[in-house]
Figure 1: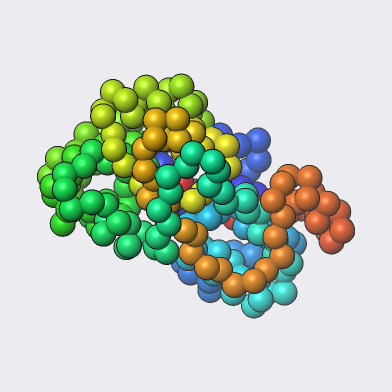
Figure 2 (figure 1 turned 180 degrees about the vertical axis):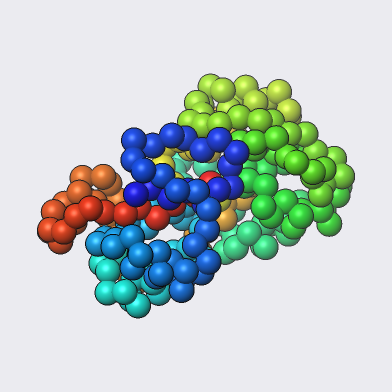
Length: 229
């Protein structure tokens, strides 16, 4: 069973039975695990979807079901990168300059309001789905696109909008790394938001490792908690 959080209008189809929507906290997830006789849980959520990861840990503790977190490694700065790390999303707006800048917000739609008080900047926002309400930003332009992206495409996007700063979550993986490669090539500063801390747990960072964990635990079928946005 594969589960999506339901935050995108048209999530990618999966070759598995799929459900969409929340569970109702850790208690609701535990009830679902029991009702569906789930034998394993793989937390493959987005690295910034901390709430569902905490709920998965609590629900599996309640039900005695083994849990594995599938977590792609975070990005690491390399030669030529101009990264400024911040500990949380709430810290990112203050990391931007006081003088007007042209900022590419590659953070999704949920926390755009944090940047509203910094109205001197022009924002470029890339979203998977068109917004269903006006953005909480005085000067902003929206680009609707779904990854994976390419360095050439993101370089062209940053140049076309004269971007001076990129704000990004350290999600890891290859599908969204193109903006960082483009920023490096163009000498653009990146405000990099570090991942939220999660309780220590067993982790694998590739599919082969996940399948090996399932074989080692020797009970099937497995259930997958939503990947998120």
